[in-house]
Image (cartoon, rainbow, N blue to C red; front, side, top):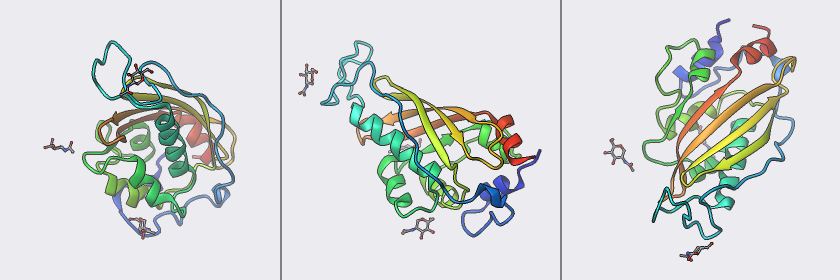
Length: 196
Ligand SMILES: *[C@@H]1O[C@H](CO)[C@@H](O)[C@H](O)[C@H]1NC(C)=O
Ligand SMILES: *[C@@H]1O[C@H](CO)[C@@H](O)[C@H](O)[C@H]1NC(C)=O
Ligand SMILES: *[C@@H]1O[C@H](CO)[C@@H](O)[C@H](O)[C@H]1NC(C)=O
């Protein structure tokens, strides 16, 4: 139950640490789809109308879609032609982190620390991470400066079980980028799919 390849990927910033990855995972086979977006506080002009956030800029519906579809691309197409530009577009340059005990569990690392401590590390590491072949959006919900996103990943390994996850984003609404990613998902189903 130890994901040495994840540990290697998290510990190294370049190279082909994924040679031991199951060949059945294969290349990406398709795009995510569906879902809805919107919610409290977001107008098309991005101005907050939520009484909880008076005067604060709020994420606009078009940007909710930009963040979710962009992050879906990063999961489905590591190393893809638009990977770096998408990451640099949607992720904050400064103080970006991914918080995920799920990722650290798969990596066999101690819990409670960032899975990715910066955007540069995210790009360098996720760039060489195996694709999640299909990430399908189930639903999204936006508050003023936070986004909640439920998704299902399929096509992993033996594809025995779908992997359901929830990601929330904290948004830097001044720069209109994702400041922090909180990502948790069904690591037991993930391990079953990989036969580990
Ligand atoms: C943004 O839209 C809201 C209504 O949706 C309106 O009340 C507000 O004045 C608009 N703000 C700007 C800066 O245009
Ligand atoms: C990043 O974090 C540091 C240390 O907390 C802080 O001084 C700096 O202002 C932050 N930068 C941004 C752009 O938020
Ligand atoms: C994208 O980032 C990766 C990882 O830092 C790097 O190896 C690669 O050269 C970059 N690609 C482009 C086109 O900049």
